[in-house]
Amino acid sequence: MKIMSGNGNLPLAQAIAAYLELPLTKASVRRFADEEVFVEIHENVRGEDVFVIQSTSFPANDNLMELLICIDALRRASARRITAVVPYFGYARQDRKPGPRTPISAKLVANLITTAGADRVLAVDLHAGQIQGFFDIPTDNLFAAPVMAADIQTRYAGQEIMVVSPDVGGVVRARALAKRLDNAPLAIVDKRRDSPGQSEVMNIIGEVKGRMCILIDDIIDSGGTLCNAADALMQGGATGVAAYISHGVLSGGAVARVDKSVLKELVITDSILPTEATLGSSRIRVMSIASLLGEAVRRTADESSVSSLFD
Ligand code: R5P
Image (cartoon, rainbow, N blue to C red; front, side):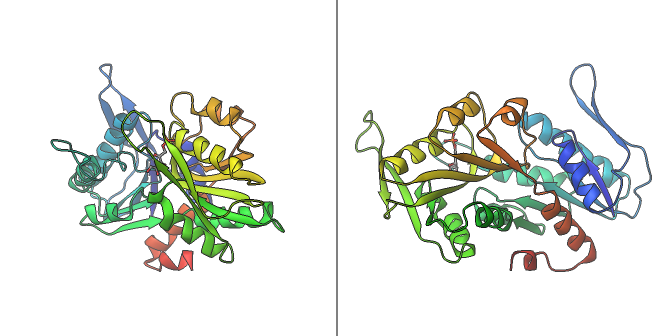
């Protein structure tokens, strides 16, 4: 087995390789003067089971092109099997047509990865489970929930916790986490705008008064969804609010927004390379999923069960 990485999240790739006690495959993934991506693999990969690690996070298009070109280079170098390990699958939120004459970009990205030559895909907390079905090659969707649940259990032991989904779309994810936390109670923040132009009203479904609320979501981007939900929960009488989010996209002023929010803590994973601002925030903690991914890679290579990682 070989582990290769693009430039999307090198520290995570190194940590996965360290878990597997393997060196990263010698390769250069660089730019020509006009910013075209060029990949050169400096060791033999003929007949190898190769895992390419690349999150398609910001800059999404560059990272996606690196992934596609790495796969192409491996295919032309006669790798036996190529698995695209995409800890953060960008474009996932474009998984349906929100209106007429709009694309389904998540499906296009799935087609591109397949056409480039990937035999399998390994992703983490896909925005929507059905994105697995956008691929006609085996696709494993790993969950950060076990890592999060273990952290919540140590951090909030003895407290009356309540798992909260910040929107109706995230209920399945929140319910799965609540189940891991000895069937903790569940609440939902329901955003409503009665008519266009009116400000959003946050209704909380569930009794959060006196509870330590744990918000769970797949993505924090601008931070709006999370910070607004945290405000509503505090107004509803929660004793505190913390958040566990798989992918810290954290665009624009999101870190500053989190720093100014009522959140006690935001925990994200390292599926996306944390920026200096993220690392400098006293409110944000980054939890590594390198061993989860490393173990999933090992099991894929050994042809053993990946799903049993989540039992
Ligand atoms: C939406 O369905 C996602 O699960 C996240 O809630 C959303 O992407 C977060 O975006 P933002 O941080 O910009 O509110």
